[in-house]
Length: 198
Image 1 (tube, rainbow, N blue to C red):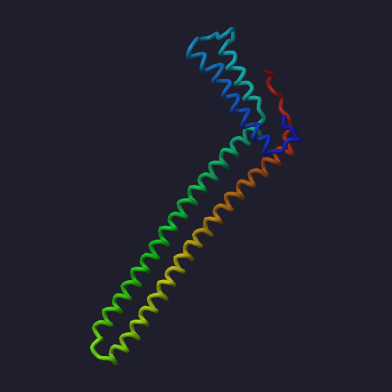
Image 2: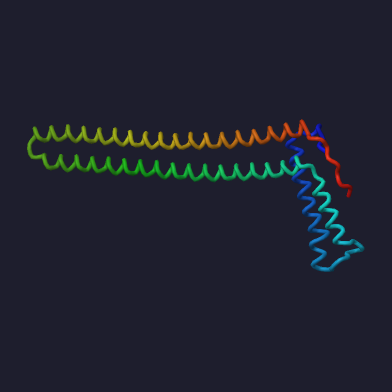
């Protein structure tokens, strides 16, 4: 029977503990002794103990079993979302690094091109002035382009993180909805069914 004075998450945790304790009891009383001594251990009928543990499991309320299933599924979803988030962030980092690296190479190429042009026109002072101006213009253009590419890479990473945040919000919404449904089910329990006596 569900104790309404205990909050639902605590009850679900106790249910998980109860099921784990039953599994441990079955291992301790039934599985291990069978490996060493068949049938009776210290006057205990192993088959009878196994049947009694099975009856206890069967008599647990359906809501508690559902709570265990929902909790495990929620944990699986959260873990999956964490893995997806890690992969997405790593992918965004790699893409941002690639874009910045490309921009740097392009800027270096443009600067080198400007330097070569400057050296080719160094023979006359008028041409030299023109070359210096063009070189400065190309350098400024390269720096502007590199800066724009970097901003673009940062915006891409920001957009990816926003998408990831939306996915995480949906997962959390589903978890909250599942918890609310379990709380409603606990607040409005079905007709109590007759339990099998152990």
